Image 1 (cartoon, rainbow, N blue to C red):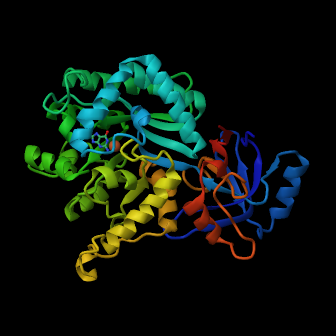
Image 2 (image 1 turned 45 degrees about the vertical axis):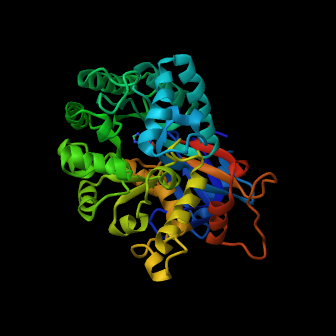
Image 3 (image 1 turned 180 degrees about the vertical axis):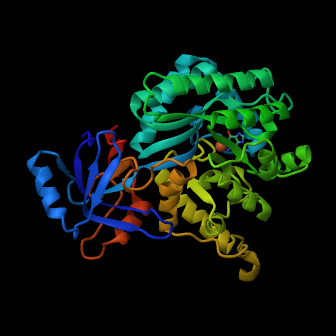
Length: 452
Ligand code: GUN
Ligand code: FE
């Protein structure tokens, strides 16, 4: 049901601060007519009873069933929308081969608008059903197909940040799939920004445009420079891949004589609204730079296992205070589920800490220090951390934030969560949700108070 203008009576969890779970037990959340949270009243608050009674009397109270829990909707910080048809496929070769052999041929097909409409419609519906309320999307180089993705997100009500991919470097991009020139990459980027901002159905700015150099290898310096100017001029978000694999990291060192981070910075592409996908090979100095610019990292743990030759040191980055969110990297990662990726983040962090080669003695096997995270950090990067990364008021149930939420039905028969009354309580329930919930447990999704 539409919750705009209503008061929700529910239980659930959020984590406004990393490391601490705030359990919301039978709280009242007042949602305004625009879908933002106006107030939150806890059970013990002095006016709790009177507010509840008044809302009930006026028919504005919506009470969720026992055994169900609200969580902030998931913020997927890295999705390649056009790669959805190859989700769970084409995972057998390294990144630089994968791009040429599978991914560019697939993305080139989006010159066909009907194909784009079909795939993007399915993807956005599936992501919403998985509880993803905000997604940061790479589209393709195509103006028309990228507009279709904008239209579909607006139609289906998903909060989305969308970029037309810029890639014009003839040395790294095939003839059949690249921007014809730097000028074309820049003109099309501007045209897409204008389209999103001027869209008649986008007055609330639920969809935002993103300056999207694919990664440095794909782009000429002229394009990188021009995109930096556009980002500055338009105040848009920026997204790109950064130091993802040995090959990608080494390519930029060879071509520019500096790391991705330094190179993006000199082009004006590293700012408060920049999201760097992967960033596995950041040096200590790179981390300082990313932090100083208040840019963010999209950690993509499942994708790292296939394409990165390494795992992003998430815990070190969080402890340093970097902005980090979680991404599926569809289809570099083989799951569209943020819950599965949250579990993946925990799993890879533990392997990073212990090391994985049984032929080595424990001391030699272990990695470079404390790397292990727990379900609290995984939940944080999937929700609040993503909102902070994007500088958007989403990811937590705090007054003035948007009411973007998922309802987890822990009693769903076809679901995969099993709670036992005599042992599961408090944040232990959230831990079980993070580790075991699946799509059948997601009973509802709201974006800006609207049920989608
Ligand atoms: N680097 C450049 N393009 C891509 C892409 O599509 N996916 C991933 N994972 N890395 C990239
Ligand atoms: Fe990616």
